[in-house]
Image (cartoon, rainbow, N blue to C red):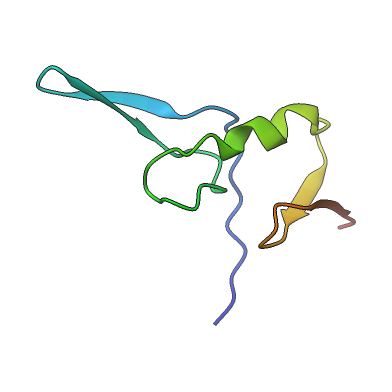
Length: 65
């Protein structure tokens, strides 16, 4: 079943486990969920107040609601 999950963050959340740092994906685009793989860089050119859809290749399209 497909679903739409709206993520608004454009950077990962850093957490510490002992002396080790991990970065948790907050944009929803990482292919290595729940960890960040740098995919959030694709979101930097998004316009505030607009909704975007990313396909499996990382191509972005604006969604008209």
